[in-house]
Every structure is written in structure tokens, then in C-alpha cells.
Image 1 (cartoon, helix red, strand yellow):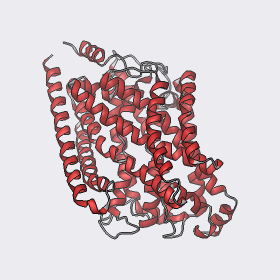
Image 2 (cartoon, rainbow, N blue to C red):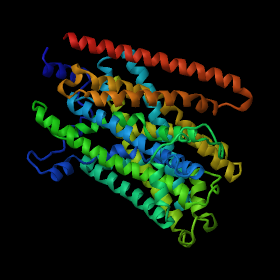
Image 3 (cartoon, helix red, strand yellow):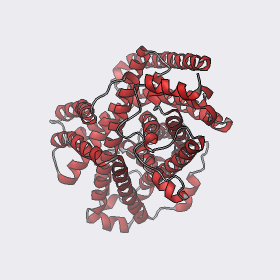
Image 4 (spheres, rainbow, N blue to C red):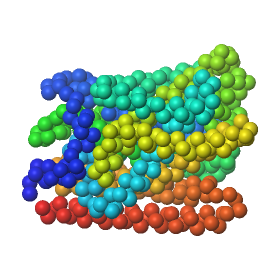
Length: 510
């Protein structure tokens, strides 16, 4: 069977094109100049970059800076470089194969494994959604003094905002996301500029040292190793790989022309790397804020509430100019605005990814607004339970419980990441899948180093995340559960790798 017919059969097996309503809808110039063509391809990278600067990144970067100065900024740099590599492979997979990552995995695996992987990825997306709900609700509470329970309910109505956006065209959705990213970038740039950080120390921090991944000293319950793991875990998220492999197909290209495919891969990579560079700058600014904006050791509450209060307290800030601006309430208000912008951006990308994995893994189609309403309501439930159960507690205890819920929800991201990055690398290394566009030796080398490193770091961080669910007196039970979970992850990962390998062998024989 020739490559073209093989590709058509796989797309048919995948239940049609990925995100069919936007697939191939954006025209690109045929003979345009570089910047004109780059502008036409710009947009999908912004939606992907949102996941690298969402509310989950904020506290890890800021508290990492507070506790260890600029030591961990090198971790942000290397995490960003790995993200660029993974997103390049993800976008290339979508453009060349005309399938998203979920479809490509499902085309080579059994129905039963597809259901298991769908459930696992769905839980990871819902965990991300919980962080978005909490971030948006807290922003509404801080900006407008809306009670948290009501603010949580208000976040449900972003479903209707998304429904409106899908009717105005995907290009306009991309533009709105870019505008919200600019808001976040400007807010943190302004705050860091006011703090006048030591730029020499910042630049030196980008060079890793033997202390970067050390397990001591312990400051505020955090070691450099746990701080680094937190930054890595909050940076590389599985849903971005599924998302990029789909929305990279939104541009209208001729798949019978290899030169046109190569051009699409090239400009999509430019778009992705530019936007991820912006995400890298934002995350670096967050860490610099932790070092330069606040006086050393003053942040005892790293939650969004604590950071907002710190920006409202002149005595906690590092210099007189910051203190003067803080008196006006501008710093804390801008922080809350950026938090709201981040939450809304993540809402758009989370909805698209949910539809991608549902259609890809289990071939189930549902209107985008209906899917969003169901998943948002499910994500709201644990937040409402947490807020309701802590209603009689002190304000500090309530804030701590909400922050713990957000941190605990991220455990599913550690579960799901290996099941996206390992198949992604296997698929883009495959001659049967990619043909002339398969990964070259250099990409394979750095790809395997990145994938093995990320999988290892996620697995060694799992016990600590699982143990946080148990009280101290049940430490033995927590250790047992941790071991069983890791064994389960390894077995499921082995099953996935085996089926993908067998699927590629079947393709090679056709």
C-alpha cells in the first residue's frame, strides 16, 4: 500500500480529521515573504504557550526564587528548551500525518488501551481545569470581593464565552489569546522593572551548578531538588502535546506537495519557538519577582492570596519605589488581572484539548460547548466541596486548603506525561509514520534524553505527591500505595509501548 493510501486509511480509522471544524480553515500565502508567511502561521504557538505560563507555574517559580534566589532559573531555561523540542515534534506529527497525537496512538493500539489512555488523559485535563477554576475564582474574589463560592459558580459561565468565540473564527480566538498573553507579560515586566533586580546575578543563574538539583538545604519545607521538580512539573504538561498536534493542522496546505509540508513544519516551528520564548520570559520574570520584589523570607503563604497580600504591603517589598506603588494598590490589582487573564487563556486551550482526546481515543463526538459544560461542572465540584467544608475555618486555613487542593490536583499530570511524550517520540521517529520527515539523529538523541529524564523525574516525584494525600500516622499505607501506583504506571507504560511497536510493525508490512 502506498504512503498516500495508508495515510487516508489511518485518518478514516481515526474517525475523520482532528477538530474538523477548524482543520485546514486558515489560508496561508503561497509565495509570501518570510514575515508575511510567519504571521499567517502565527497563532497555534500562542495557544500552546498558554499551558507553560498558567496559574500552576506561578507559585512554584515565585517561591523558588524566594527560597533559593536565582539558582533555579537555569531549570526554567532547560525546561523551556525541552518544551520547544517536544512541541516541534508534536506539531510536525500533526502536519505530516494529518492526525493528532491521540488519533495516531489509537490507530496503532487496541480499543481497551484507548479507553484507559483516554481516562488517564481526561483526569489530567480535569486536574488542570481545577487549577484554572481556582485561579479565576480567586482573581474575581480579589478584584471584586465576590465570595469564593459565587466566584466558583461564575467560572462555569466561561462556557458561553467560548461558544461565542468559536462562532467568530479560529483566527480571532488566536488573536484574543495573544492579547491576554501580552497583558500577563506587561504586568510582570512592569513589576520586575520597578524592583530593579541585579541583572548580573540573573544572567549567572542561567548556568546550572551542582547545587541546582541538591537535596539540601531545606528552606520553608523546600529543597533545591523539590523546587526544581515543581518547576519542571508545572512547565511540561501532557495536554499541550495533544493540542499542538491538532491545531497545527488549522492551516490550509497541499499535502501532496512535500515542499509545502516542509514549509508548514518550518513556519509552525518558528511560531511555536517564538511563543514558548515568551512563556520562558514570563516564568523567568515570576522567579525574578520572588527574588527582587519581596524581601528575603517574607512570603510565608505562597498561595495566590498570600502573593496578593504581599504586593499590597509596602513593608514586605524590596525597595522604596515598589513600596510607593504598592500603597496605591496598583501592584496587587495588576497581579489579580494577570491571574484572571491566565485562567481565561487556559480555559480556551483546555476545552480544545478535551475535544481532541475524546474524539481521538474513543471516537466520540460532542458539541464543544456541551463538553466544556460537563467538564467544568465536574471540575467545580471538588473546589465547591473544599470551600464549603472550610467555611467555618479561619481565612488563613481556608486559603491553605484551597491552595493544597490545587497542588494535589497536579498529581495526575505526573501520571499522564509519560503516556504522551514516549508515544510522541516513537511516532515521530517512525519511518512508516513520518517518511522523509522522521526525526534526524540529533533530534532522536535529545528527544530520548528529554523523554527519559522527564519520565524519571515524574516517577520519583510521585511518592511525595501521593504521600501528601495521607496524614502522617498513615505513612506506611502511603508508601505502599506509592509503590503500587509506580508499578501500575510502569506496567501500563509497557503495554502502551508494546502495542505501539506492534502497530508500527503492522504498518511496515502493508
